[in-house]
Length: 134
Image (cartoon, rainbow, N blue to C red; front, side, top):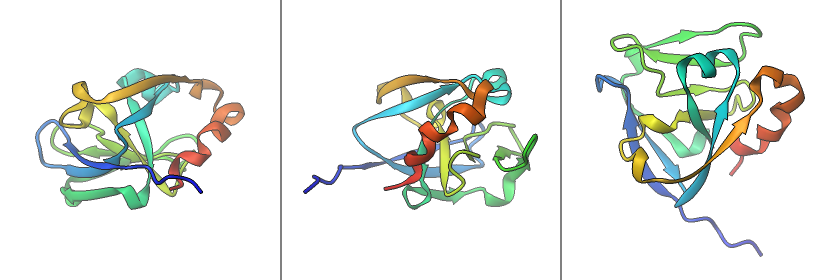
């Protein structure tokens, strides 16, 4: 029998505060440092979680969406400050990718940074598929 993983709610949001969210994370977790075109250009390092562990607290109407290439990933940005604090990843359309540095206490969290080769997405995406399952 597997021991359930303890999770703690962590708050976060965009730069201007118009978008706020909460996500349940274990004491230590992995973040993906992806080298795909959009993550590399924006410096987005993120943790992928199931949708059940993510809650948008405010700012739904302040979000704008950007898609490209396959159109499957839903990149969500604050209309006011332009920050992408979370998005729906192509690899895990049933979950969310939360930008690690958009968490309020990101510097004090115990994370392992994993390089992810998003430039060769088709060959590597399967390695992320389990991350949106509880």
